[in-house]
Length: 508
Image (cartoon, rainbow, N blue to C red; front, side):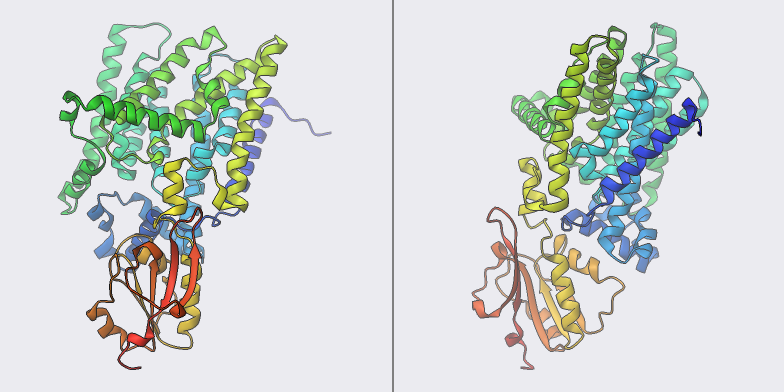
């Protein structure tokens, strides 16, 4: 019989968790229709493919860094389905998060015997928890930002522990990539600085030296990023910041209390929805005195990220809280491993109960993602944007296939609401590298009171004219006989409609 040593067992468990992660995350990857931001990012990627000299830094016009779009390029050639290609990159990035969070947890474990167990638990939780599971399946920049922030945290931790210059170099690189993933990486700096207190015995001399070197590494990382300022579109990155964050002056006004507690209440709602009460209990309940310093440090790092966001956040989407998953997962994994290793049965029973409740909470979210997207237990804010509003892409893929099949028989001009977002980008995304000789698609803005004359002028060269619009943005009086198809969102939300307006063409 083949004998397996401890090291081989360790790597075998690693591989099994990774296989579990890929199966869990790749299954039904395209079940949720394209989200507005996904459509935009994938469309930008396609524009870069078509004309990189013109569009390489195009995302900066909208205040977005282009790293995610650059990384999506090869997958647009590998996979036929454009949405799957974009989301597949996030699945790979998620595997990186899985490994990095596992390594961080192992490094922070003060209990030798439970070190590997806490690492396995962290990797498992990263696979199944609603927040990480969902964002590792979306073609958004948040998973990439999360990976580079996790790497920055890991390299900072390793430097504090080992005092090796090599880790500072890696920190410079990872923080630069974090900024190049999303500018909000700047909000993570306080959490990195908290690690300066990670020491068994405090030394002021070491603290000052480490603080200087850490700040220097972060400054160099930012300087590398700021080196892009020669690009004409670079200032747009900082202009858009005012759309999402209040200026610092707000801290000295009386409304700061309303903003802070309002945002804090919002954060608590998201944590309960996506982590579940059982895991949150695990993340704050320390069952080992040896772990006390680590638990306090991680809670401080969590607050160091959350409090500035609560104070300055003007428009906050739940996905902005994804970096907090690192601290919550590491805390829960360390505490659960300690519970399991306790000799008293009552602790082991408590560990089993909290673990089962966490799995149950996550399973409901995962299964609805696979089989019944209308019932996904999103928080209220996410339910609106992913399922009920114009940003939700219900029907987009079907409409595109209907256009392609129709244009094989007759030439077709399609007007869509909007200029930017799910419409028309969601449709244009699916049309990339398809035969569109007989097809024209243009956005005409919203709400739609009429079809613009300039569009009708172009449409007269085609056999048919369609309008694709969300029902709540259609202000034209149209006979229901002209409605070709309708794709309705859950909870009586607006429907995506396809209308035949060929009667408006002069060639009829």
